[in-house]
Length: 102
Image (cartoon, rainbow, N blue to C red; front, side):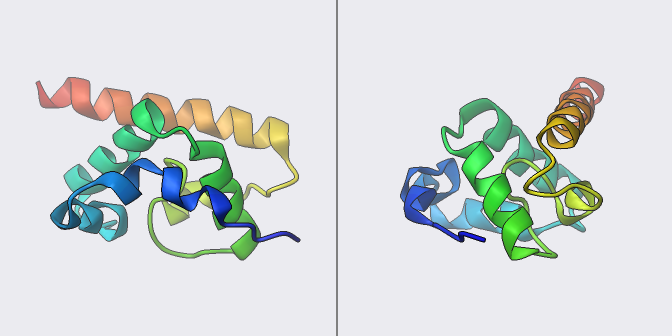
């Protein structure tokens, strides 16, 4: 297992003003969590690396690569097809959340 973190400085979360970082660890606050996920899916150039890191490290909290801890359950760093399938499901949930807000 390689927990390489060289990509971290490239993440959208690393370039946000400090008050917004809480969004990535506010899983009880659905609008903030969905906002963090949306940033990951729409603007993060290292989303896949971040997701793989969270899976390899078995992180049980926070938004990583657009996935919450619950979203990451049942997928693994080695299971590319399962990860791809889950990515589309989570991305759709995030988009739907914001469509419903309008």
